Image 1 (cartoon, rainbow, N blue to C red):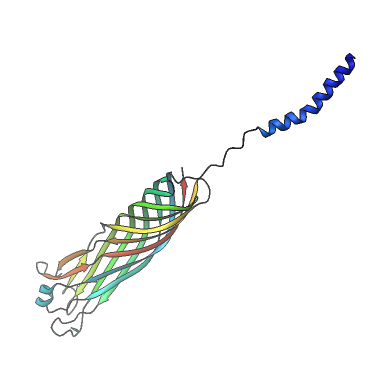
Image 2 (tube, one colour):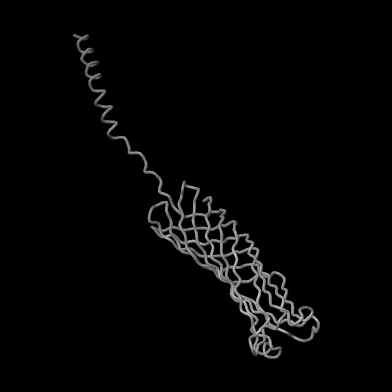
Length: 260
């Protein structure tokens, strides 16, 4: 009898064990959800691209043009340059909206020149000798901008951006009257920093939780510069004025950043 009771208890335990295991499996907690990517955080990156630059310049000074009977010249200075540099910033995301701030610096090598004729102011006909040259160089561009974007997908960001910008520009020129130099005026300015603004937009894709790829377009505009110069052979007598208008730069670039 005792042996039968032991056998029965053993059989019941063997039958009940799978059911208990199944019951425990059903009550096990579900795995945690996968983490959702957030654009909030600091980042630093590098970019490379190309840009075109456009600027108008002239020698318009009605008083001096009439006094020395030299017609003003009007030219356009166009150039292109590769650009590359670094950028860093911070974002904050709430829902699908992302706000941020970013600073960047890019090396450039813009160089442009143009040549205008030496014409009489009264008739517009050529003097027969001389000419007017214009030149400009630019070595870097930087900006500090705000950003506003939205996320059509968790790891995709579309944004617009705008803020202040700075660049380093040098100007030069020679205005040669009849006979040429030293019967001329020479403009030469050391490179100086000019302020302006930048605006544009772009798209970013978070390839991983830390690496972010981007494509971006920016338009820059910087202040121009004017200077009145004297004759080389008569330094006390002003001969002409150089007016360099606003500088406009359009840049397209791609970059990669690490998000902390």
